[in-house]
Length: 250
Length: 74
Image (cartoon, rainbow over all chains, first blue to last red; front, side, top):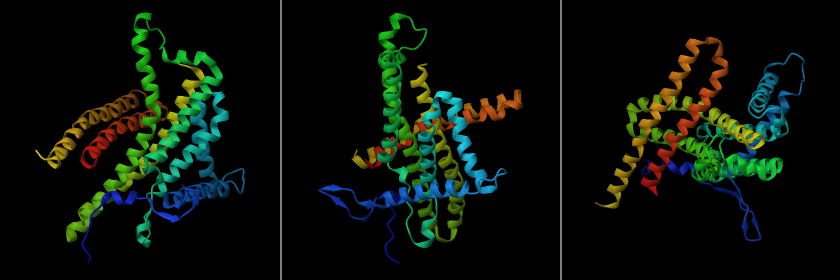
């Protein structure tokens, strides 16, 4: 057997599949792009296929599609109110995309010799999504309240003397929102997959006694599935809460 | 002290913060159990907040892990 090199972080490498050069700008189709396309294809298949029958009493597939819709619709209605309905498609897209991206990264492509890839394990992807949410929500807030939007940074019932101290803190915590939103999803995905790979190297290293770290991997996989769903849910619900803040200012 | 040793010590120090995270997660679920014990009908309403709280505290744990990785491999 060749010399064993153990590199738990190599699973996050982006490989170019189809080089595309747009006048000096690297727009290649990478394995990251492939998995994003796979996620969108799976979501479309899931939802379109599920609602194809349009039965009054839904079968299993239609139930699942309707459940995912209801989960996000209830989340938006409970956390944003009736004004949030127009933002439902955005939040639903966000939730389903993150959910499917996280889940696709867990599939054992290694069995057939291919290499899976978790799209959301790259900070640039999660940061792009968080930035879209942050800028979008801020624009919605400013468009609705004009300059009164900035009264959001002065918490209610604060004596005037404390305001010069509190406002910079509030502004800073508001600016930290896209950072924490991105970092939470990225760190969860990267740490989870790195841990799985590290335990996998233990299995190889221990040889006969490799069943012990293997059991640990089974437990970790269960945790990773929970984390994948939970992180998508948390991203979506925090988007709803930030939207609520922008629309209703306190 | 060479850089490698300093990195290892730094990474070890960075994960001390996880003690607070353990307390936080225990706190959240203790509150959840108490709430459901007092009012079992509230379980469905309280559970989403429990999950949200857990994920937010877990995020802090992962920030600490991230710092440890940055120290170790940065």
